[in-house]
Image (cartoon, rainbow, N blue to C red; front, side):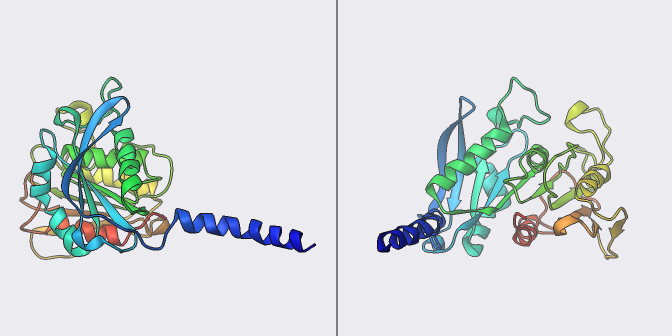
Length: 283
């Protein structure tokens, strides 16, 4: 009888022990200062740049922000452009700056080219295997072609990506399955590369207008149908859909007179995007 009781207690304790081992309260994190790492994804050699702040050691699991360069860009230039790594050093999150094959993301998807959605998923796994990353706080942002790619991730990988923030490149690739995805986008009315009005001569690369893409995400997130514009002085205007499922808000920062650039003057896009991400863990 005593043996049976001991056995029963051990069986009850095993699941709790396994959970404790699988999800430690804190982690021993090694700082990584913009290191280039390699992995194989879909049979192809890929690289990415990783930054883990020096003050992360001993902290709980860190959020992870994916930063995607525009067409023709690279990891080093992108890291300098946004300053996400400097912000991460102050705020305590990790940054993965990804590299597209031939500096061009496979979006819209063309089958013979690299599967970039799988690449992002594989990078999450690669980082999580060596660093303590919070799987509920993985985010994606990007500029231009990287904005289109982060839009695709919100549609195709929303079980792993908590929120997206495309800049100068919001797209709607619906219908999308899965959960409601918080969306913040920034776009200039004087952007002549990815025109705010859409419907230019770019083929499948740039189709719908920014308001149409925003409306697609709002419908996916089951927001209220009315687009609300906050009354603001100056070139920066905020447009948003309210009442979205699981607080998955859909918001546009529209900047009059701004071209195809990463915003710094009218709004610090890097800081604003991080504040948006902080408010939206995976639900």
